[in-house]
Image 1: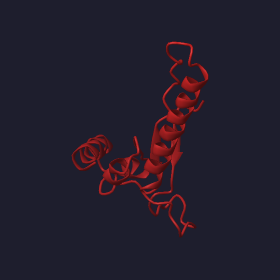
Image 2 (image 1 turned 180 degrees about the vertical axis):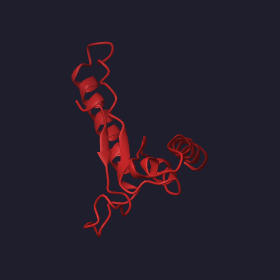
Image 3 (image 1 turned 90 degrees about the vertical axis):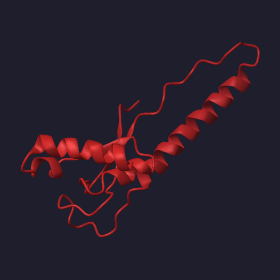
Length: 114
């Protein structure tokens, strides 16, 4: 089982300048919701198979889904507000004048706007 899943490219990024069509900020949340739905369906099937037993064993939760690609302070809240567990950011942090402050800004924006 994976520990996490990255989904993107959400926005244009210098890491992949050849990409002209982005998956967009909604896709990570859509994938997360689908994973949750599949897990719930599997649990329902397990419960139906084990009617004589008090309770079916709980399946582990799906791995967290993180948005990646072109994530910046101005857009980091969008994938989170659409269902992603969080975001993966490299360039915005490493190119910031104050990387620690950029991380704080990203976290604040995701909490306040997400």
